[in-house]
Image 1 (cartoon, rainbow, N blue to C red):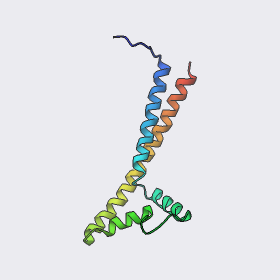
Image 2: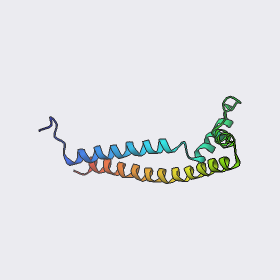
Image 3: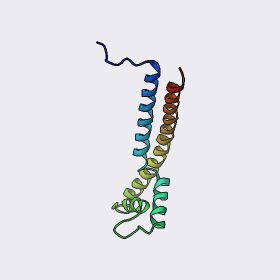
Image 4: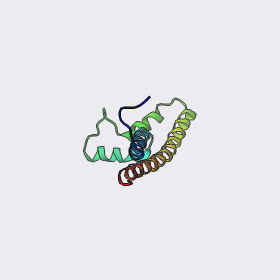
Length: 115
């Protein structure tokens, strides 16, 4: 089976690099909801713009409300621990995604410039 367009090694390096970059951006996007630092920044930005209302709580208030909604003290502790564990897991995944982003950019550059 032959393909209508034959791609050389440089084109494949650029395609794989773009795939890595896309995957890294997807991971960073999904992990942003678990990151407490990002939630704090979003909350400060929302307060600075004056967009916080009772109907529109900040990201940190939403996380605190999730913990407060638990019925028992152990449920609250479990929810708080899960939030902290999710934060650190998101930091690790974001670091891995950043390394993937750099590797993808390096593959794209190598595919473009290496002839």
